[in-house]
Length: 426
Image 1 (spheres, rainbow, N blue to C red):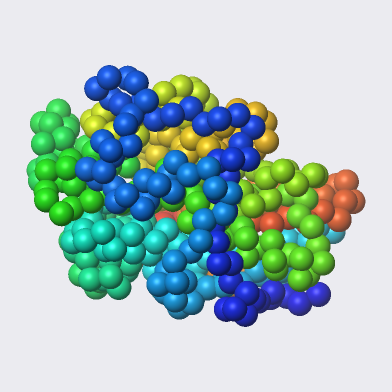
Image 2: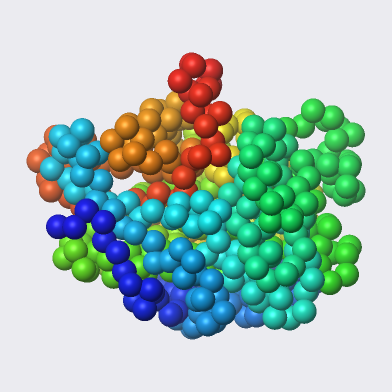
């Protein structure tokens, strides 16, 4: 079997997969924060282009990828599916371990899969500027990259803890001409209110979303762009799973276990959604113990942001006011999760696990020393559980096939690894 399974660019999927028609029950609708009734789609036109709203509510199973988006995808897609043979040897496991490596994109993660699509649909409708939030900076850098390609302006509200932990992410965004602001900031009313209560607030994705949405609503020809959670975002990420399916078929293997890290749910859902419904596949969503949304949150309606500006979504949530500890996996510090993913967890189709920061970095170090790639702190959560599953297979003697999403590289996260090696991580 080939160690690296590659697809030709002509084999790249030409459609995204939409899970909405295949969910076990209809998705509860988003609620208007003013009326608490299902929100009218036209209200969302204040921050989203019509093309994305149509995708958000579409019941078509497959949605065509525009040729302009496909041409940009070809800068890095299809991405490789790699057999982690050296990791298998280190663990002495009979399991076959594969990882889908999304870190080969220009910004270094899976995020451009949706950033490019969102920039395209906004530019097509004449929008000139996008605002967004970012945690560790993967999403912010992806949108900065995409907006530059479509000649759009971009402002990124970066969670303050990550802004100072990961200065080179900011530099990367600024290289693509984005403006990066530490959140909470004094640029927006919602940011000012939070700073008045707590001048040393480390920030959260919920707060940064509030600032970005407020900015978009108040400024003409400006839209808001979201890096996870919503249906259209997860839709764009399914190119990961659709490619993986083709690659596994080429290798003549079927997955037994599929693993991914979860903050809002886009990279994990992008990997597994094309496989949901297949018999005998176990799906494991991995989150940090510092922000255990799926494992300890309540399944109920909640705002996606701290200020309560966004529609309420039915999801597992720790509450919109939850401020997670400033762990290095900044992309996983979100109080809620994608409603479609939450529905699958509710029905037991997806299982969730929470792991601690130190053990994920231990797993990341093992992966770096065996496979040679430094994984993003977010991706180390998936690696930790992949190792656990491979050791389980070792105990039982089962030759399981484990597939995980290596959602990004950790080249901008070396301070986190230094802290780990110096014993400074909590």
